[in-house]
Image 1 (cartoon, one colour):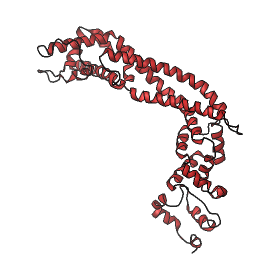
Image 2 (tube, helix red, strand yellow; image 1 turned 60 degrees about the horizontal axis):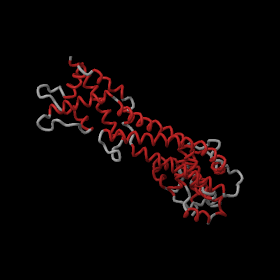
Image 3 (cartoon, one colour; image 1 turned 30 degrees about the vertical axis):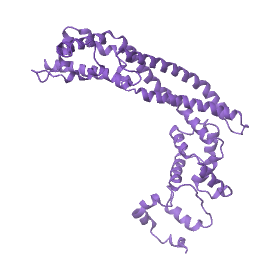
Image 4 (cartoon, helix red, strand yellow; image 1 turned 120 degrees about the vertical axis):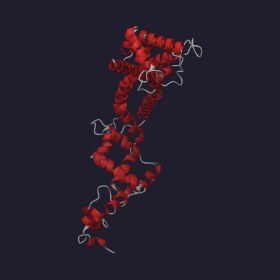
Length: 359
């Protein structure tokens, strides 16, 4: 059978229009077209295209390569020079890491090493990558290098927010007076039951507005406290000014912060291991891993050490303020802890506005 003679007679555009959904999972590539199909018919028997990798993986790899807009040689050269010309966007490096040739793929591709010109684009790309020493580690450390400053600039403000908020909560005289006022109200209202308490759990701050007046449905204990502060404890009205970093600290989860710091440390260690590995390898023409990564590590290790010091200081401050409020620092999360104060400040401000509007 020779179907190629029929392609010029068939209305292939109409076939595309009516049945294009089938092409998504069919043999045509993402860049397939009617002309490609005609070419396959007339030329395919003379130029066999070989593909040994999974069709879905090959399709995704082809999409990536079309976005990079670089030849395989240019990609290989950029990887060997650790992207000295900044040809790879960070997200592209992340995508390239997904296409590390597996041992099974390497074995299959090596079987066709003599037919490299007949390999499909994705197969040829993976074949050439598999020949780069420590390709996966090289690409991971390149990704780390590109992301390092981004990660650092994201983490530092979070660490500073928790550090400063911990200091503010611990030192604020207005907060201390407000808490004394809340305790006084609580002891008076609970006299004969749970009165004469020497303190209360921090999460009680979130429930003050739940106590409603028995004679005024629009009045809560928080409204009454706000009115009392307006008339007798005016320093408490400026509590928010004492705690400027609490709102930002309430958005920081300590567990996630520790996870991000661990990721930074692990990445730096891997860079160090790869530098030592390449020191022991014979010099390859065009390979700039050692000079590029040694320069990067000289700078990055100093910046990471500074961030580590800040992180240790923050942890110590946060532990101290947790214990001050009888909270367990090993189980208390920073977003929950500071979220309580942020919620109280917000609801207290709202109560003051309600009082103003009611006058």
